[in-house]
Image (cartoon, rainbow, N blue to C red; front, top):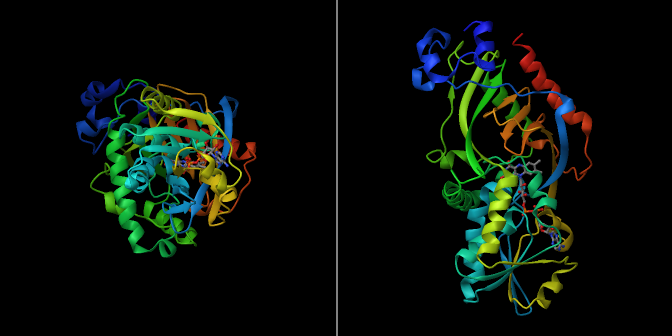
Length: 389
Ligand SMILES: Cc1cc2nc3c(=O)[nH]c(=O)nc-3n(C[C@H](O)[C@H](O)[C@H](O)COP(=O)(O)OP(=O)(O)OC[C@H]3O[C@@H](n4cnc5c(N)ncnc54)[C@H](O)[C@@H]3O)c2cc1C
């Protein structure tokens, strides 16, 4: 494919499959059913950043805390510490903790926290016929959860290999499988709370070299479990040289599940209220305050907040920052290029610098926004598009 062809394919000169099929030489090596649709360019300009958010992943080396404890006559079931995987694992994690919470036959439960874990756990408990009161200091729009990338990333900074041990892999797999199946029911729903989008990995160096670099950067030994669910998730493939409408030497295409969190949050809250869930704004200052609730089964979904509330110093902050470009509904694909991740969410185009791999932001509790970081990320994707000229 010539540079001009690439430019046409990217900018809309090739009007979809029928035109592509009529001009197969523009996509050498690609079967007709593999030809990408017209790809609109992201308008990568720092002036289009309408928000920049920073947040902390609640990481625990041994994996999320899902055990129980008794405080007087109150059963507390923990559900926190999901690192960079909280949205992805939420439904599976909720299943695991509700099995423990409901074991005593008391269906009147309190859930503490209105982030990814608290909301999904509440919705699941309501579906099971429980009475649920959700207590939280902040509602979803103010939580850290809403500042997430919004991608299916079930083993992103979820644990370290050795502290988690082999048994956590089995638990992780169960949670990931339950979650994946549950997200299925949100596909095709009005407002697209959850959807699939094409994702391109773009590189001028080989992916083997990139993988080796990421392994070398993984000095702590973050666990990786993705191969356990390879049968579930769509597989990616290398695109033949010259075929894809991108100017980089190596291009890999896959399909990824993404969460449009504005819409997804509304959908979850709608379900919560429709099924009779009750919500109370309340801050807890010590675990003993849980025993003052009228509910005697409490699910603790306080995320990073558990570090202070439960004095759980096993939670390590992993900082992450996102620059939000004005949404472009015509951009239907995401990509990674020069350590920048771009996700085409309906509530904003996510632009995130990932340099440094999983160690990036590790043990950094600074939630102040660094504008220069997001402008650097936008600059790198502007440079990608400048290569088309
Ligand atoms: C930059 C970034 C990108 C991410 N991307 C993804 C991704 O693509 N996919 C994915 O699956 N995950 C991702 N994550 C991880 C995900 O966001 C977290 O795992 C998840 O948000 C944790 O949710 P939570 O409900 O446990 O915590 P939170 O969202 O922090 O919610 C905690 C709730 O508890 C309440 N609370 C806390 N303390 C108290 C208290 N003392 N009293 C009363 N209420 C309290 C809070 O008000 C809040 O309502 C990302 C994280 C970051 C930082």
